[in-house]
Image (tube, rainbow, N blue to C red):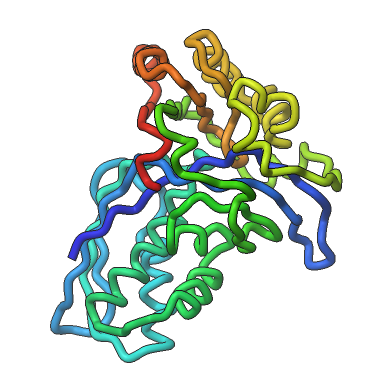
Length: 283
C-alpha cells in the first residue's frame, strides 16, 4: 500500500503571544505543495514495525522517526499486526516544509487502510495531534487557517479554489538548518487582528502590505543563504516572496509559469533543491 506525503508552506506566520504552557499561539495559512515523499507499508507476520528509508539521508536512527512513533501510537490504541514500511525521502528536512509531520500522518492513514480500522476524521485528527502540532493539517492536506500551537484548523475566509488557477509556486531549499529554539529566541510575539479574507480579495502582489513571517528577518540575517534564496525569487519576478515556517525554505508566488520555472532553474544552478508547481495542484 503506497501513500504520497505532501509538503506544506506557510502563507504568513504570525507569533501572537506566549502561552502559560510554554508554547506560542500562532496564526498562519498552511498550503499543501506538490513536493512529496513516498511511503509504502505492508503487513508482516511478526509483531512490530520494520522501517527502512531511501532518498535524502535522515539524521539519527529510524527508531525515533515520526513514522515509527505513529505506528507505536496506533498499536497502543488499536489491535494491529506487524508492518514493514519503506520511506523514500524527497522533501528536505529542517526546511519548514513539514515533511516529518506529513510522514507521520500519512502512516496513520495507511495503517488505517491496511488493517481496516475505519478511523473517523475525528479519531484521525486526535491521533495526529498527539504526534505533533503540525500533523493534523496533513490528515486532509487542504489549505487551512491554522491557529493555536498549529493544531487549530478552520476554513480560510472567502476561499474559492477557482481563484488559484494560473498561480504557481516555486519553493527553494538553500540548505541552511534553522533550529526551532533559535528561531523563537529571535522572535518577539505580538498580538494582532488579521483579516485572512485578503488572501482571496487581494492579488498576490499586494500581500506584502500585510502578510509576513515573523521568523524571516532574524533567520535570514543569521543564515545568508535564506536571504539569497529570497533574492533569487524576487529577481525572477515573483509577486510575493516569503520564508516558510522557521526556515530555511523560501517560496515565491508567481502568475507567470515561465518566471516560476526560471526561479527554480536559478536555484538549481546554486546547487539548491527546488520545486515548481501550480498552487491548485492539491485542491
